[in-house]
Length: 316
Image 1: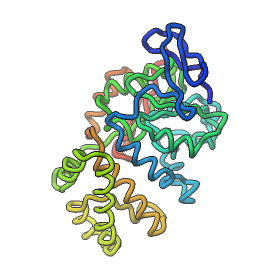
Image 2: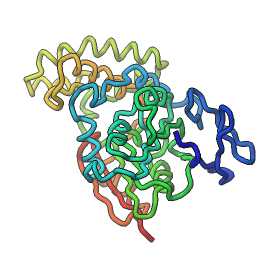
Image 3: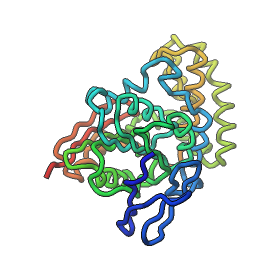
């Protein structure tokens, strides 16, 4: 991994590797644990996600499912052929177990990938060693690189789970080169959320400790998945189940085996019921956020997690 570009956002000094640490001239020290720089502690609001990604470490990997689910999602989000990212410096914010990291590396990007949680351990196991990957545990609100370093700032499935969407985008934009591309998504406001038990389940489960959250979501998936599967070809029953069931179910969206569908449900049922922060935006709301930054151009599309946005930083 390449540590020479890490930079203290407090003293504006570079970090240098020394034994099991990164240190600045003013003795700011960042520990390397299992070879990974740790700019934050494990105990934070994303701890449940860390547990999740270390358990379901390869569930969404295209190399495991043998389906190009992540590859198609990533190419659509980027708005350009994956063949064109070779040699680009890409910041991947909130990388989880590294499902998109795998694809970025496959197509030759120079990837700097981080997560707030110890999900970086899973990403390390999945994608290291690789000469084009630098992995670290850090905070999206304090990214330890100089201004205008990256060609692309990529952040999928993350912003709605941070303390502040606007401040997160501000930091992602700070480290983006002039003319660089910001690629983000966000949960979309949907009236159906308020006509279902969606928020009820979440408000109860999120209060539990991570290990207990996992036990509850595993139990709920074990109970509800067979019901979803039994009625998998009935649109009316799936509509009803989406109103009362706490689990995620993707039959018809992905060409997976029953066992793979079950694992996807286990993963995403945990994901949607354990996040500490959860926000939803309308398209108008996201546009309002994006226009604060005076991007040269931008587009917002309804897809992926709800809303996806591509914005280009002004060249001047």
